[in-house]
Image (tube, rainbow, N blue to C red; front, side):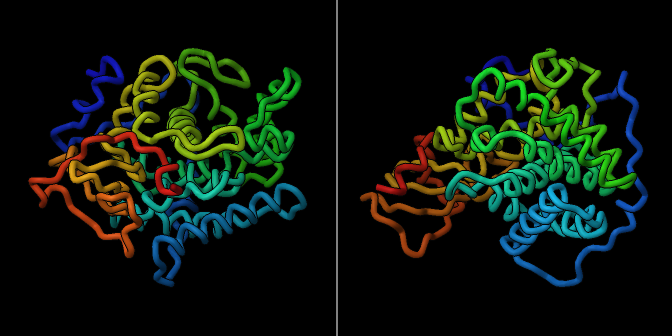
Length: 340
């Protein structure tokens, strides 16, 4: 059982048993359209980076449609989400690509793409089938469409006055309205994403729902969105150290997020989260690019700085499981070390 953020090193499950999605008691389960099962994956084989860039482009087109119309094609969105799902089942490279996006403040399309990828990976960790994963991905991708109706200051994360905060709290309802305007194919998504910013303890918005009143997909996307918001930069602050982000999320278990969801996130990002910078006992600095279920304290890292702090060109990869004399001594290295 998780008791505090200090227990982070003991949270890795030893067995690979999958948790199930939390039971839904009070909120009617939204039917997931059969089209999610029928949509075909793209025939063209792409790299993980190309898939990520394609997802961002499709998301940009959806936001453009929300501004000026006509409604987007659901089949186009499902096709790229299915491609992402395939990459996630192959390995962690696409997730690492998502987590390493630290160059500048992510725009709305990048935030949507990142949320979709991490949300789908969370659903997979909870043993969801393909149809369910695609539904989760759609909700992650589209949950912040309503941000188009708020000020640029809110989008960029700048400090808001009371009126600005109230406007921000209404954006989930705007997301629902936009999705309903897109037509029946998207209306069910709207009924879920309006709850993404609700929290189990009733502290969320726009309606202050609590516990089982919040749809399970909304809870899942909400956790992914919260984690990514802290792990990526905003206009008023740099990205937080990913290791510390994980500790903060652990402290949110039971009250703000369901414990099973938090455990699933820990399983994915590991004790040393994907995308985080770490210092090794030989003074080298590397980025975590792979995890090990059997040895969670010995991930795969990409060495970026040598023992004297000089850039490692080209970066080299090291699997700590295979290097018994090398280990992580500091898991909380700030991104700024790479700019010195």
